[in-house]
Every structure is written in structure tokens, then in C-alpha cells.
Image 1 (cartoon, rainbow, N blue to C red):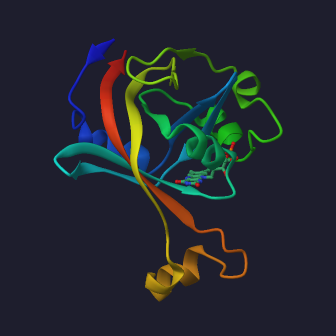
Image 2: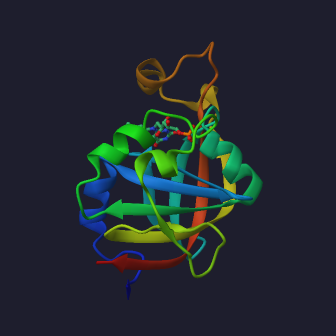
Length: 168
Ligand SMILES: Cc1cc2nc3c(=O)[nH]c(=O)nc-3n(C[C@H](O)[C@H](O)[C@H](O)COP(=O)(O)O)c2cc1C
């Protein structure tokens, strides 16, 4: 494991994110993983941040609401099989960890573990959470991605990156 700055390999990691990254949550004895392809890496309030976008219907959303933390994995190995499970099935009803054969390592700064896979990992603690306001949204994006009736907009979880490292 190699400690690296949060912006290390940023270009590579954002390229990976745009296809498939993983967001891990943990509450009680339950660990859950979902696929994420939308998010932002940057600086806010002089802090390194990752902004996760999670729809309120996700089981992951309910866990982040409880713990205000999560980890992010930018995989450096092919995880397409894992993504099929974690990006389509909900942890509400099943244990995706065992179904996908995933194992974890304890994180350093938070209780949520990181996936024990090759890649870069972020330990994130939520410092601001904001649901999207439909009335402030660009109409083309509204049309493309959201159904007003379902009201399943994303919540932006602005999270301080407390630690970042690479598992080879
Ligand atoms: C490529 C891809 C990217 C995704 N990105 C997001 C995302 O950024 N935010 C989100 O809320 N859901 C996203 N999803 C959907 C969730 O991964 C999916 O609904 C998952 O089953 C949620 O699991 P959960 O209910 O256990 O949290 C994505 C799915 C795929 C396949």
C-alpha cells in the first residue's frame, strides 16, 4: 500500500470514474458496494474533496445518511463482472459483497473499509450534503436523466478526503 496525495493519478482516476468506480458504505455489520460513474474530485473550503452523487432510492444513500462516510475505489484491474453485480442489484435485499466475492481492508481514518483490490482508494467523510433542486436544473439535463414524477434526484455528498492510497 502506497500513500499518495488525493490528486495523484487524477487524470487516470477521472477516466476510470467516467466508466466505473466503486463506492463502499458500511453500517453495523453490513458493508455495501455500488457502482458510481458520476462525481467530482477537487478542492473546497481549502480541503481536498470528492463529491459523490447518489440517488435517494439507493441503499447506499441510506447508509451514507446514517454514517456520513464512504470509501471510493478507482480500480486498476478489470472489475467488469463485479460492476455488473454492484451496479444493478441493491444491497437492500442481498449481500453484494459475498455475491461478488469481494473482500475489504480496514480503512485508516474511518469505519467504512476499502475494497481489497488493486486501485486507488479514498477515505471520505461527508462535510456537506445537498439534494438537487429540480427548479434550478438545466432543462436538457432534467429531460435526459430525471423523471419529475419519480422525484428520484441525486444528493450531492461533498466529502473531505481524509486519506488516499494505492493498493498495487
Ligand atoms: C456505470 C454505472 C454508473 C452508476 N453511477 C451511479 C451514480 O453515480 N450514482 C447513483 O446513485 N447510482 C449510480 N449507478 C447505479 C447504482 O450503482 C445501482 O443502482 C446500484 O444497484 C445501487 O446499489 P445500492 O441500492 O446497493 O446502493 C450507476 C450504475 C452503473 C452501472
